[in-house]
Image (cartoon, one colour):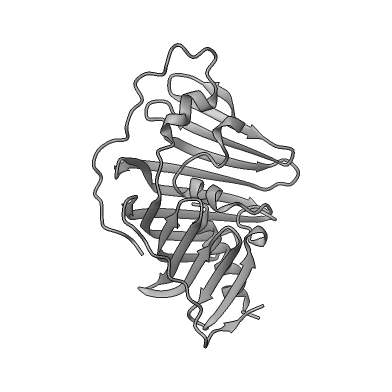
Amino acid sequence: MVNTLNNKTIVVFLMVILLASCAGKKNKTSGPPVVKLNIDSSIHNPTATDILSFTLKPWTYFSSKVDLEFRQNDGKKINANGSIRMYKDSLIWISAGMFGIEGFRILINKDSVIILNKLEKKYFIYKTSEFKGLSDVALTVSQIQNIITANPIYALNLYQITMQNDAQISIQYSQKKYNTSHAYNKQSYTIDSSNLVDNLKPNNAKISYSEYAVFNAHNFPVFTYIQSKFNGKNIELELKYSDIDFETLLSFPCQIPSSYEKAN
């Protein structure tokens, strides 16, 4: 068994990264977010899909570096840095460490989560359906990628518009156990915040996005702030992204060395 710090705290810490992130080429901000000027006036009673679907710009690869600060209500505080690579709807690869030393490497696919603890030369393998982050519901690879790239967690046709004015539009997907909502900036049609609320337990998470800029013609928030309450624990995470790249072809190295011990 891996000790509590490495097995529980670090796993939660890394999963929080997922709900918020090696780097490709560096791209400087190329301008402000693209602004939607007109919505087709011929659409009668437009749905969330009608209004917002144009914001879902296709991509295949994504990479970024990230600096982060993780805090818990028990006083635990971790500052770290890492990098993330993603292949759309299929793979998420994360490298994380401190002081320039890689401590953990993670590969998530549709079926499994592989975690390499490079400090202790151990590895974990979980079923993706069992690996949970800010709630007790496992997210799919696609849903985690949507959270990282500031897109709706679920398909737009599942959402209903709950509020709309000159400044903002809000959409919500209500399920028996969870409500998921997103607040859009009406000028740029980028997500200001996402909320996940448990209807049966006092669990919730709010993800706030800011400092949007254009990278390879994609609007992306340079800053992400996550607040979560889960099973009585309050978690805060601040992330700052850099070297954001939606174009470079990537590899996803995560081979388990033969000398590593499998941890329970």
